[in-house]
Image 1 (cartoon, rainbow, N blue to C red):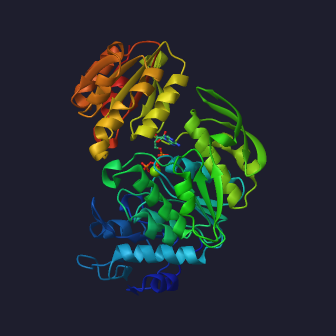
Image 2: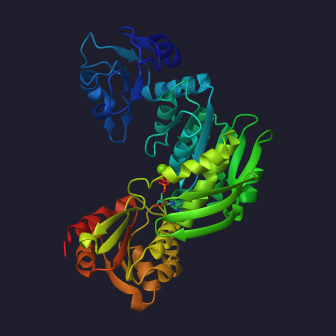
Image 3: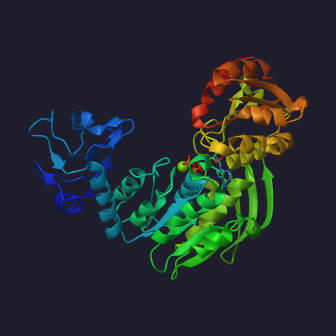
Length: 450
Ligand SMILES: Nc1ncnc2c1ncn2[C@@H]1O[C@H](COP(=O)(O)OP(=O)(O)OP(=O)(O)O)[C@@H](O)[C@H]1O
Ligand SMILES: [Mg+2]
C-alpha cells in the first residue's frame, strides 16, 4: 500500500520528533479498530486517554504512535513525539488538506448532516473516487481525522462539521477549506446552548467563511433564515440554493419517493429509497453541492437509488414475527427530526400508528414549548402516543385525551407499557434524544414474540 504520510510528511506536518522513521498508510484514534500500517494518534478525550492504549495499538499493527507523553512505553517503540496530540492531529489534517487537489465539500446544519454527507458519498462515488467522514465525525478531532485520512489522489472529499457551542464551526471550516459548503437546515437542535434560532443560523453561517475563493455556498431556500445566510456569504463566493421550490413532481410512498426536480438548471428524475419529504430535500442539497463541484448531475441523480438509511436513523424492522413494524429512530431527536419521523410514520401501511417518544434534550428554556408544539404533528400521524421523561409530559398534555397512551418517568418505566400495547397491524415509531435511552423500548418491543 502506498504511504498516506511518509516519515518526512509526519515530522514536517506535526513538527514532532520521531524515535525511528516510519510511514503511515492510515490514521486511527481508536486502538480497537486500528489497521496495520496506521498512525495511532493518542488523544485525550472526555472518554479517556489514548496514551493508555499505545502499546495495544502497536501490537495490533500500527506503524507508529503520535504521543505527547512517553512514560510506560517500550524504548524501541516507533513514536512521533509532539507537544500536544490534538494540535498535531489538526496540523496533520491541515497538511493533508493543503496537498489535496480534489474537490472538498463540507456539510453543516441543525439536522441532516450525516444523511446528506452519506448521500454525497453515494453520488460522488459515481463520478470519481470519494472519501467521506466516518459516522458523524464532525468535531475538533473528527474533522481533522477525516482530512488526514483523505487519499491524496481521491477526486472528492466530504467533511461533516457540527457544533454544540458557539465558536466551534469557524476553525473547523477554515481547516477544511471547502470548495463547496452546504447548510442543510436551521432548526432548534442545541437551542439550550445557543439561545435563539437566529444565533443558530449565525453559527452555521460561520462555515461560509471557510469556503475557498471562487467556491460555492449551498443554502436552504425553505429556511426563513435564507436572507440572513445569504448576507453572511463573503464576496467572491457563489450562491446556490436547494429546497421544495425545486421539486416539479413527487410521490411519496412507505419505501421512498419518486422525484422530478430542477437542480441548477438541469431537469432530473430520480428514485430515492428512503421515505419522507425531508430525505428528498437532503437529496436536493447533495445534488446541488455535487453540481457546484462540477460533477455530472444526471449521473449523480441516477446513483441516488443506491442510497440506504443510515443506522439508527429510520431503519425499519419487523415486530411480532412480521405482523407489525418498528421504525427505529432511537438514535437522537430534535423538533425537526421528530416531525420528519412522524411524517414517515404516516406513510407506513398500518391499521394503527403508535408514536413512542422520549425527551428531546439540550433545549434549555425552550424545552416546554418545543415539546408541546409537536402536538399537531402527533395528531396528524399517530393514533396513540406513549411518552417518557419530564419534558414529554407537556406534549402528552397537549394532545387530545383520546390519543393518550401512557406517560412514564423514563424509558425503563415506559417499556413494559409499550410492549403490552403492541399488536398485529401496528406501525411503531420510537424516537428520543440519545440521553433518553429509547433503545430500552426498542429492545422490549423486539422481545415480544406474539
Ligand atoms: N432535512 C431534515 N429535516 C428534518 N429531519 C431530518 C432531516 N434530515 C435528517 N433528519 C432526521 O434527523 C435525524 C438526524 O439525522 P442526521 O444524522 O442526518 O443528522 P445530523 O445533523 O448528522 O445529526 P448529528 O448532529 O447527530 O450528527 C434523523 O432522525 C433523520 O431522519
Ligand atoms: Mg451527524
